[in-house]
Length: 325
Image (cartoon, rainbow, N blue to C red; front, side):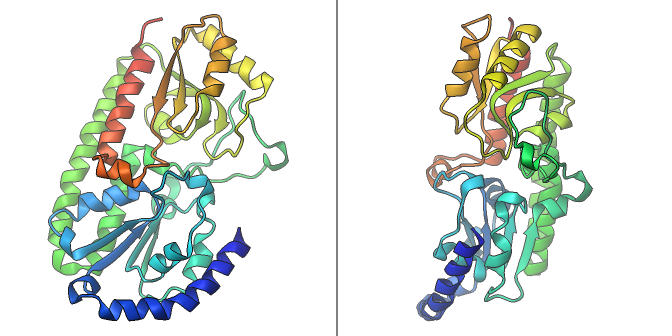
């Protein structure tokens, strides 16, 4: 992967002079815009919420917008050019973003503000964990990577939006009051959603989620005191569950009398159906949570927001925890 990024950087360096010429020919309105590049949708949408009222003066781009999963994304030459000239670059900072260091080495804009959101989260960042029954790589089980799915906590979102707002205010002090006001309004919406999650969990008799899939929701379950079982960790590259894992999950369903099996939006449902077939109840419902890892440009045009997606996840959580056996 590193060799591929280095090769792309060589190509980028050859392309930048051409790119600079095209910029000279563009309108003054375009060149004066504050350029912000984000890797994934949650960051992109947080920025959208903070710049409301000043959108015409911001050039905002989301790199991963074709449905490619965060964990398998590889930047193109165009992606690296976009990053190179950004005023603010925002990325998660986990294992999936190991390509970023190489991409930043030849940045044209030496005054770029770079935000690694895992670093911004500080001590609140959690190590990825391997739970009982999960598939895992025994050769690397001593390695402790940080769980990069920090956006799946509305509590984290409030903290991270503050860091993004600080960066906006530093780069564009003339509009700092607007950004601060937007932040306060957005944090109120996040706090309201956080309370809805709290109320849903508090009133639920069931406190366990079971995923026949990868599990990127550890921050969410920790926020509200939920337990979980899953086939794979959130960043796992595994796609096939072993017989032992299938049996373990099926037995957990029987033991806990769960009326459902969960998966994430990118799943084909195969593992969930196999787990159901091995369970006592063959009529279990499959519930799908949105991990927001593969949001597309089309989804954005159709109106998805971070808040709407997390509201949808709340509705799925409500069904999982409150559905009768």
